[in-house]
Image (cartoon, rainbow, N blue to C red; front, side, top):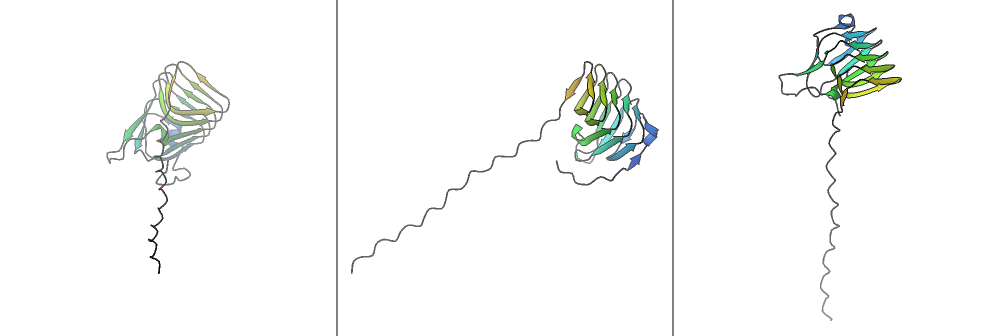
Length: 167
């Protein structure tokens, strides 16, 4: 997927000291030097070509029913998708019961997903992924490119001139 712009190193550092509740995140890079706890829904607002990167040096945890909610802009650029979010976690990630998150989660230690929680995206952890009655929705793969047209037949040789009459 091509992106129309590059991202700076970190635009937003230690937002709300890691205690996140009812926050709206516009496209960009967010980083925290310790932990993040999401206690209520958070909103990701932008278009389908925008990207968000959340870098957490410590751990991420969420309360029960703390969701990531997508909001499109009113500019006709569509709504973000799970492919637009990346979560880089230096510690562990615990998703509370009945919570829903989006994105690719790259977790250094372990991941625990609570009962009835769900993720639209991918989860990679170096130690373990612990599941308790959860569901995953994988983003659709990109469409296949159209087939190449068949090769053109070689051009036919020009017709031979008629034989000349004998002298």
